[in-house]
Structure formats: C-alpha cells, structure tokens
Image (cartoon, rainbow, N blue to C red):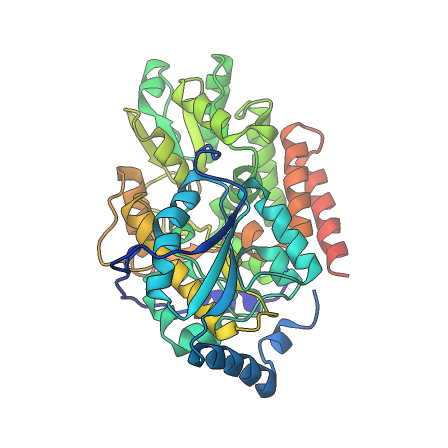
Length: 463
C-alpha cells in the first residue's frame, strides 16, 4: 500500500454549486436504445501498464480519439456509445426508465447511446467485459477495473470542464491510490456511515442501560442474549467486514486507522489485533445471530422490526426500511454519542461511472458519464429522498437520523476517514477478508488467527 493514499484523499478539495435536473429535455419524448435483461416488474425492490502511464497517453493517441469523435459529430452523424448500467434494484431501473431513456436524445443530441441493463448479472458481466478487453464506453465500475488498469483517468477532464466543482463534499470523490479519480457518481456514498440504531422501548422494558462505552455494550449484549434476544442485528456481508472492524479500530484512536490506510501498519499490528479482540468479545457475548455471517438484508431488517433484536448495526441506507418504527434512537459506535469528532465514511474510489481506456470516443464518453451523474443526483435526491454529494439546488428531505449525519458530514472541519476495505484493499484481499470475518463470526478462527491469516494473505498479494 502507498502512503500517498491519505495524502491524496486529503488533497481533493471540492467546492459547490451547480443545479441540475433529471428531466432537462423538453418536447417530444426521445427514443434511446436499450439492451435489457431485467425490467422493473422483474426486479424486487480493474493490471496492465501503470496507472501513471495510462493517465498520460501520448498526445497523438489522445488527439486521434478526440478528433475522430469531433469529426463524426461535425458530419451530422451522432457518435455511437454504449453504456453499461448497474440495474440490480428497482430504483436503478426507474432511473433508466424515467431519466436516461426519455432525456438522453434531447440533452445530448450528438450521441447515439445504447444502454445495457444486466440486472442481477451485473458484476459477472462486468468481469467478462473486463477480461475480454471489450468494456463498454461508459460503465458503472468497481475496483477490479482499476486493478486491471482499464479505466480512463478522469481527473484532467473533470478539472478542465469544472465538473469537479459541482460537488459539495470532498468525500464524494475519493481518489484511487495513485491520487487520480477514475469514477464519478452522484455522491450518495459520501453520506453513508454506520450507526447503532436501537429500540428505546425494548431497553426500557428490559431495564437495560443504553451503552455509553464498549464495556457497557458488552454487558448489554450479555443481558439481552440471556433473555433470548439477538442483541445486534448485523448484515453478514460488508457491514461485518468493512464497517465494524474500522469502527473498532477507531474506537481506540482514529489515527490508527489512518496509519493502516497509509500502509504504515497492517493486519498484524497491535491496533488491528486489539480491534479484532473486541470483535471476538462481542461474538462471545452473544451479540450477533448464530448465522450472522450469511444473514441477508431482509432477514437483517426483520430481526429488528420484529423486536427480536433491540439494536441494528448498519449503514445508514437501512434507515429507509425501519423509519416507520417508533421509539428509535441511535449512537455513533466509535464514540457512543451523537457528536463524534470524526466519521468513518463509505465513499468508494471505484464506485461510479468509468470510461473505458479503449473507447474510441473518450471525450464524448466523459460527457455522457457526467450527464448520467447529473441525472442520478436529481433522481435520488428528489425521488428517493437520499442525500447526494452534488448540489441539486434544494436541500434533501431527510429523516431525522439521516439528517443528523448529513449535517455532521457537512460540518466544517469534520474528519471523514475513507473506508479501508472498500477503497484500499485489492479485490482478492477484500474477498478473503469477507470469508475470514465469516470464520471469525462462526468461531472457526480466533481474533489472533484472523489477523495472522489476513496479514499473510495481504503480503502474498503484494508479491
């Protein structure tokens, strides 16, 4: 890992303000081509040459691609592009149907865009495109693309046209390890962190104190478990491996997490071992369901809404599934209060729209990606009630807990620590992290065995 990661993250200074819209086109509804393997009804709810070399293409190559796109536009024929969308949930399908499809021709008349909606086959199809070297011009990408060095460095493009200045929070654009930006999004992830939300009524009914420190949390878990509750409902995937370890590390000292991100210390360090020992103590106190490693989202939510779990530990996006409940309150896990001096963020360096390095029309592809981000920002802010990292001209209508965190993220001087597992681990190491957290949760590994195993896996990946 490189020490430049934290330096790069701190160096991205993003200002505001740009008002944009999901429905900017007027008049006759435009047609667009879509290749889809899913519909709203069917849906229930990157190594080659170095990044530095890739981001500094020869002037001849860049000019040739830009000239080709300009010539096609000048000839009167629209530039043909293909966009590969994440379409695994109903909201994303609505975004295509209500924003992309009807507006792209009016807003971008020089482009002829084919949209592909792969549904739940998104990740596997992206892997295939990446391995074959035939990535679409624009696609919703993730870290395997960056590890394969197949994405365009967007930094010079979004700085030149001012797109970078449309973001109102720096955590909306976390740079990759080389300091460059390869993915752009509406910045919803910029406002996501995890919170411990609890049912006040159950705490009062069972006469159990709301925890104000880690020792009291262990005691509360022990007491609830003795009364046949599942003390904490936790999603058995990224919450378990990406959020909780980082929260436990920063519980002692947030500077330790920064050292881990910078590459100064790793899985075998004292801070990491101390945090995983805390994790193991929670497991031994009966904090989680016995099948927590494989708990699905619906099961996770149901444990809490049914009253079986008095606490739910989850990223803030879960709040939309439980905000109709009464008697809810929360605390920030690292600090056990509502006024933390730092936040463990979620924003992903590789979570968003990317442009293929092999696109024959890079400049037009960047414009399409920017337009899609604008559509996303307007849709998710106005239609879905999400906080987004771009200014859309109005403040989002947020539920109380989400609003508290939105204000914290926007608080001047707030220290937002990027998520380690999501932003700074190789895809292969992250997969092993998830597997081994599962083994920790099922007591197949001790905390020390976990750290020793992950330390070896990480070092082997760097050979």
